[in-house]
Amino acid sequence: MITVTEEAATEIKNLIESENKVDCKLRVWVAGGGCSGLSYGMALDDNEPEEDDQIFESSGVKILVDSLSLAHMDGSTVQYVNDSPMNAGFKIENPNAVSTCGCGSSFQTEGSGGCGSGSCGCK
Image: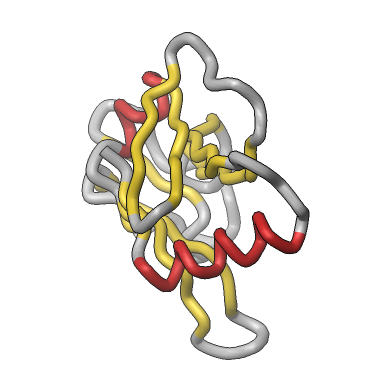
């Protein structure tokens, strides 16, 4: 399951409203790449779910995630961080990550490979 914090849900709903989308969902996925081997992706999606998508609802937001991505992110939470005007945005808190990139945009899960060659440093 993937969840969304109340603060993230508010930001997502504001984005959906500002883009005049109807029945829009948040698509979350994992792709190869990044300094730690895997990286996150998120986008608003108003298409029909794909055949292997799992659909969750959290804090009033519908979330789509494909089964392969879910294997790496099950139990994750989408958060909205607003530490400063220069450091505001969405962050995924992933309990499956065994190491993360110093910049927080990529990660590694058990059995997903080693640290990549990126410059932000695994920890």
